[in-house]
Image (cartoon, rainbow, N blue to C red; front, side):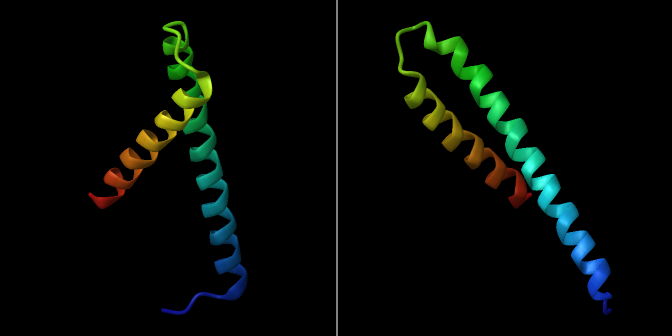
Length: 65
């Protein structure tokens, strides 16, 4: 099953757009969650780093199934 180059490029651009949209949504989620715990005296940068690792793990786990 061969796909014309133009159609393949279009699909690749759609996939990149979807990936970027998902990354931004995850980042917004991470920031909103870290704002809740920032008041407990934890550093915002540390919370974001840990939350991003957790989000990446969840995404990897989701793609396995």
